[in-house]
Image (cartoon, rainbow, N blue to C red; front, side, top):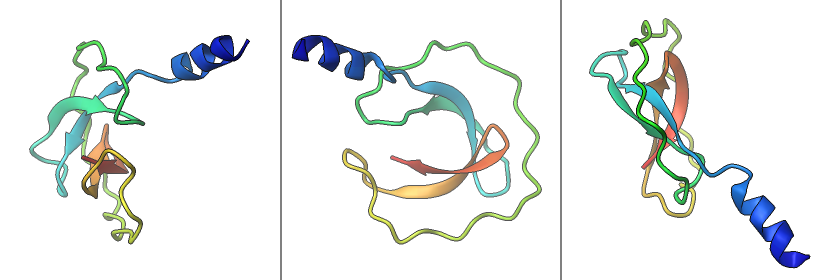
Length: 87
């Protein structure tokens, strides 16, 4: 029974999502995987149209440590919405 529960937990959310990730001004956008975990599988590469840049101000940087498996986090526009992206 423990193995079945483990398989369900592993399969629950293991795929990245392809998104447009842009710099501070909504320019220089790159089509790349955005993952919740460093162990997530790459997404299927079906490119969507590039979104318009967000008119919202860039959020202030956080003082939190980056998640395990990443080196740094910074705010970037992902599909036109500000998100903290860790690499």
